[in-house]
Image 1 (cartoon, rainbow, N blue to C red):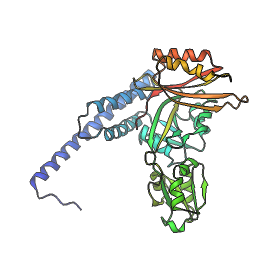
Image 2: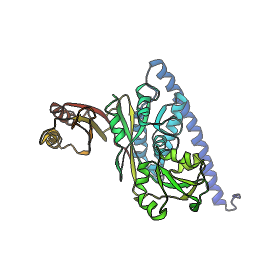
Image 3: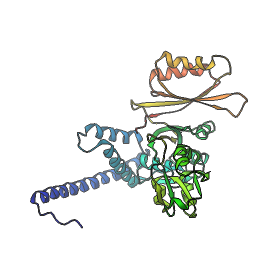
Image 4: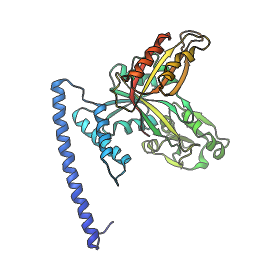
Length: 362
């Protein structure tokens, strides 16, 4: 137990911190009271309770004003929680995600919306899309790609069947752990996890767990849940999954590449307004003929729009017809982006704007 310092200077500094903490507490409650008043105005005016544009404006303004030494990354986390708690006083957000609890999608959702939203897990990516389509959730998160293992094709396929928009993206650094009930490596006879997670740890598993069967699960968190009932099994999963399912660490950070990021999409019924640092996603289909894709993409080169991703998927409606997914820098409200997309659309069988949204921060 920390004793009271005998050093008078130390006591003075600690007293200063106590005074500052008390002032911060008073200001937080004053802020919360104003949030409650704003909620009442929104109810009377029938306005939306959640404004992602306003949240981003607050975070960008504060980090722009910050002169340190308090780090901006920590400042964003703290104010994300303050905003989340304040919004919960107005009306808590319902957020759907690809579950169960403890998946990396769950972690990304908390990182983006804060701890005070209501989080609802779903067992499939289709069910996540359904939750927004039918109003069960205001927003939902789905994984879209990993920096080392590429695209999550099932997520792309869902955009063919739903008229939903991308409202933002979340970039999450992913670290995997080998977990079990006992934490004893010698007891492990099988290992479970999602195929993407297993692929990201393939080298470590082959070198350190040779001969142990590696089996697929629907998610990393589901693997952790299964292992929590089986002494002979281990799971590759997150720190959060270890806490939720009371598992011990056999080894931390077993991913083969340490700079391992997964990108998640936040889906909603509409996209946000332009921020000045945005990304636009579109989906289109073209006639199968020589040079067709070059002709389609030329307007982007002509207008100097940077394409950050292009991915193709079979349409599943007609043989040899492909759907293309393209991400580009800029917002649909920008004239050059809008005009380029209009030119592209003229040569497509169809084209859909999936959303324009702020570029995610790592």
